[in-house]
Length: 332
Image (cartoon, rainbow, N blue to C red):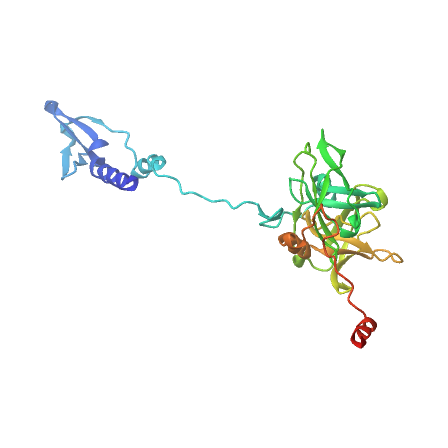
């Protein structure tokens, strides 16, 4: 309906343009002519009056008053606000999948110093009566990832997190931490900080380890030997190191006890793996669980759900009978 009104208005303007914005020629005997002056010759004026063109001798003209005519293009442009602007849908920079987030377009590459300042709040220290490890927050509600072996056999878990205040990171300890899901065989655990007064947490983005190439720069943040927020840098040595039937990423970034469960980042600030072990008798031989396995674990967390009321329930399998026992049973 709006478009029809605009087209009608434009048609009316095109018809009445010449009369609405005409020049006025005052003639002798108090007569006048209104129209568009097409040409001004030495002895006459050529005037378009709409239905014909008049040639007016100069000796009959007393005065010429020219209108401030508005060009059609300018007139149409002035009507532009009447036409609704097209709706432009800008896709979000990030996509939330379950309880973690990924970037829709790759973030810009930055140096490690810049990224550490941004990501410092997202990396935490996980403490249990039996030891400590690292972890990282994956959403604002306090869900975090660590290694299963960091919390194995433990139910009393605390998390040391860091919050920005006046440009500085302040440490705060949270004691009410629940185990949400575990995957013992791939060494992953999903925890949640459940303290009532906990603020919204700063979280990381999960990246894509498949897009990495051998030789790409990576860095880890964790608490090796309890030295919180330690940063180590290196390269990706290989993406497919097979160990005990599982594939790991190998890196020269230094990994030590206490780094377990911490994030391995690319230079876009995305987590591309969970640091979980090293070869103790060598240097620069650290390993991380690829982020693809972590996403699978999170996407199917119900299959790995953990009951805090029955800590023995996940993956409780009976030992298979030995051949000897089978033979004795058959003999009886």
